[in-house]
Length: 264
Image (cartoon, rainbow, N blue to C red; front, top):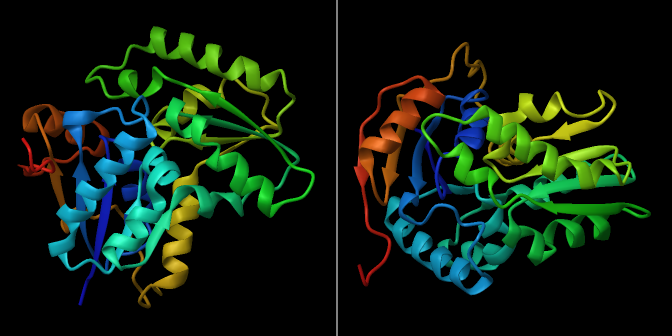
């Protein structure tokens, strides 16, 4: 019997969590929800994100989930309590999961503007570890650029330099990619920093937390990533999202249109 897992994001950022999960186990059925009509979430205010979180929970309620993997850092930072209390299933979030992976003293966080304003990363990490300093950097244009069908490498490189520079001046020793979209440009970011600076992808920490709670069946290893038991749902533009699925995941899948907002 397969575990029913919900994953949501504003767009393709959740692909990083999806891939991390599917690399580790086959005993799952995934409902992947992308709120493409309102991407990006990172420029919305606290109240807007909490309303969206309620709508996401309402959509997932009849899916009989065994667990929810929160693939959006902004929703994680602003509405974790709503997600945990509304669905009544185990919720695995990026920020609390990755906070235990920090091992240095000077930590940089690249994140959306709303995640930075929430101070959630800073509060969680500094509450768990003594003598740690967390420096946050908002990256307001990253998600919109990553969500384009053809990435503008010149623009991404320009933005990467712009956002990394303030952190590098703080002599950071580790960088957390505090938005699930950012691991999609991991290599670009890695090439711009000293090899001694570790880049931390929270998706790995989240999936480890999930696998520690739901034990993997014996002999359930994956030689390749199996997408057969993944269903994709979007709130707008099926054709465009289908192109992104094909580009980033190298598969062709049916994409279904759903409505999250009752007043639409």
